[in-house]
Length: 308
Image (tube, rainbow, N blue to C red; front, side, top):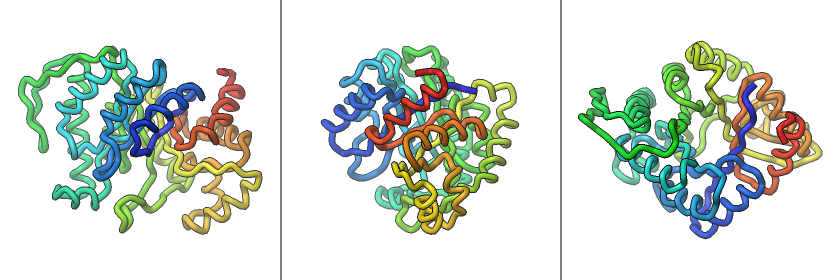
């Protein structure tokens, strides 16, 4: 089994808070400090990560995730490589296909069907990977054409790529190209443009992991699986909280308690839950949005896993 990794995702729009929470995440023992990417009042992801990097010395920094439709892959490679040089090799680059139709409407960008956005993301990855590996790239796809493209070489020999996608074709491509596949198990985007239908049935995730494993082939042993914990609830009434969430999410309580996208219970119960998720699905990389509540869980997991 792969060793555990833990990320903290910042959602603040305050640059001072970015620096402060990056230091707090580093002191608490998180492996990665992450930011998202949205049109609107949030901070620019690369600028926010530069601020986080300047305030820290060891924690890695990454995007979770960039919306591929907002930037050309050559420009993304240049930004990532520059940031990697500034941080002495601490960057991890996360990419997704975009999902918020309200953000696309706000800037007048066509919101293509999911299949089109996912193919465009796959092409971007095929451009990014060789660029970040120091190669000159010629590429002619359905969505991108580049000729003799080059960027700065990162400090890292292989700057890690995380790809957050759903669906058979997109997951198959990610399994063959990414260093980390970020699982989402989400359905239709809801009317607010931000939230989604939840498809967190344990058996559905079993099938998804089987698909990724088959698609990865020889890469499976090196492939990392990631889950963003959407809710973290510290409670000594785990079953009761799970039942309440079951009603809200229209998902059986057994799946609510099993899913890697929720963390419920006492610190010890959460730690055992993460160990169970890794044992069943191979998920070893978890991101949360609460440093104080999760720090004891992280310490317990590492102690139980013998890596403290």
